[in-house]
Image (cartoon, rainbow, N blue to C red; front, side, top):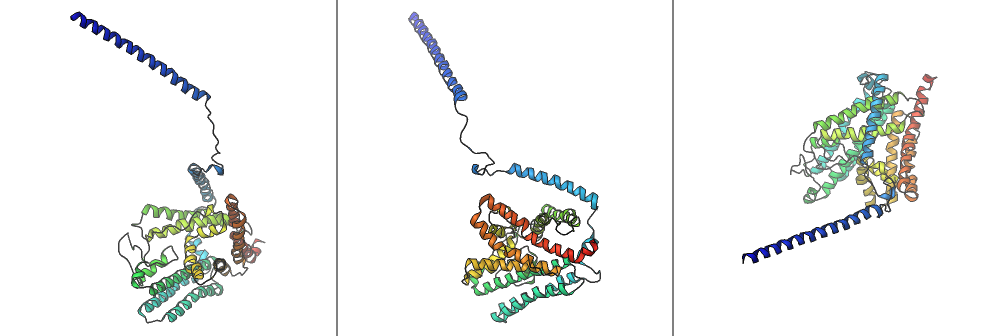
Length: 443
């Protein structure tokens, strides 16, 4: 019996060895087969396929973050070189006397500052008129007439002072007229929104409101918005369109605020002033460079600084106008506050009154051309209509680019119009002003 068990054990052990040998055989067999397949795939399979280069427009590739970072690095290095060059050539340019001299010819005459102070009268008149309308003391017709007279004086009064007062400098005049133009657009929007609130029921008026301050649930409804605090918040806020409640940011970010302040001061004193001082000859002003500098200084640095200081939540002051493939897209996206005002208070009301889109768009360009001419010719005391004609020329240009050009060609046409369009019209004023006032000094 024991012998039988030993034979059985030996047989099982022998079978196990045969199975292991068989398994090893299969392992090496499949190993060599798969190794051959992998080797064949590496050596003989195709490593190419139909595809476009990344920089080709047909590739659909859009991630240029590394190139953008390279541009930022090159911009920082070039600006650092310009900063050192200006520091060595002009020294420290933060000179209060030099800045004040741009606004004053006579240190005992302050017409620009006086006009800015007087602008508070028009603000109070607009607020008083709306309060009387909310109480029913004024009829809609009387309130409309008061607003029209107030707005008309806002445009005519500072222009007359700039033209008649000899001590008003061109820079001071441009600053004053720019301030009054902004105030005109703000008070016009203030008039319209409060009129819309009166036309609606109380329940519908509440739908106009959005969150008030610091993300709270409180709402301000008409006529609770007719206060001095609400009015002056709107006057200083970086927007031209009035609302009962503006979106608010939760707090002031000091690091963000200081960065914007540094950009405002450094760009003006280290880049803009030296460029102007080194090129004050006719047809030698780098107007396109100054235009780009002014855009960044005003629409990014200054307006974000003001918005952060006031906890104003809507920071979309511009969109990607540099990618514009049509002239219309450029004008709709490079100055968002003005575009919103024109769309809300001028273009759409014309459409509701039955005017066509072409007529309404032409009217918007005409209004813009008027203010461009107003802000340039009056401070310089020269009426050449260069700015007006340059703005009105955008209408046929917009039609041509939109109809015959597209993609990169349209974008190139927009950039050409930016370089030799409105800036060139301003350059013509600089040329005429130089000839009239500095030709004899140059000779």
